[in-house]
Image (cartoon, rainbow, N blue to C red; front, side):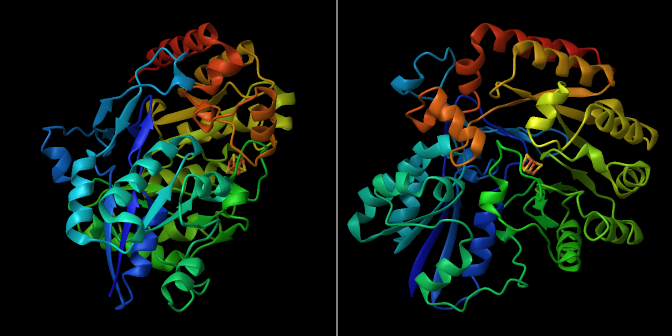
Length: 435
Ligand code: SF4
């Protein structure tokens, strides 16, 4: 029987908070592969905050909605990041436990998920561990964001097979399995975890917008509504196991709300499920009318994150025109009228994108604060293959993906002083929002 180990790698970064971070894609791959008797499949998530390996360090913390800190250890900063005056860390379960898993399970294939482009050191760590323990015979396969955006980079690093885009059919061909049909909506396999503080879900896939800094359309070229009934049954099942917090990973949850979100929430309301929903991916404020705000409140939305991004109308237009100031203000007003508390609503403002001045960021921060809600900075990372990412990489001579880190690029594009000032300003403005 072929043995397969699906891995969510550790993360090397300046900071990492479990802002409802679960490897949704790898958990679906795990569910898919587990269906077949010719495969013996296991899952290893370096970022499982509830793993006994993490608990062994006496490290346990979660906030009211299941978010929390990851176990992180300071490591030497790569020389290209030397100019950043912050500690560089490795987040996740220590390597020794993964090495034990490799020795005992002896997988033939290690499937590694690749997330942010600048998180490649975690992928390399997993690959090196597998090679050092299992030798050349282990086949390393990668899929996910970095694999889709920079496949050659990973091939040059020694990955055997790099999957670009949707992975199911490619895995079916590697393992000689029947292909996945599009209507076969595979849900994540949560039994991979012993303890689970929240569950992530999707009602839609992709996004019809084309913001020049975003890779959504490269990763999921088609925008479509998924199987709502199946997702609802999945939520009900997980709720019966005691999960209360459900997190939407949709890129465009509200765009076809009458086909997706509304029917889903109507079921939640009808069955009187007492749940809490969260939207860490910014919602499109344009689509939050009175009815939408009301139904979201009634169904149990607890935290709302809205994209504002820029205050300058020319910049709003240039960056895709997905929201204008009056639409954002109207959305906030509708949410407040529906009964959401001010501190449960947050507006995102961009920091460090090409063509944006520190003054523009300040105006946007102050505007969000003026509407009476919290504000968060969304630090720009130039994503390869996106129009604006490519432009930024060229303009600033970025020659290492580590420099595309969202904690790093704004320092390059705006300067340390401006970034520090704007972060402090954001904190001061949030302190003025009554709790
Ligand atoms: S609306 Fe959001 S998900 Fe869609 S392209 Fe723009 S940034 Fe990406």
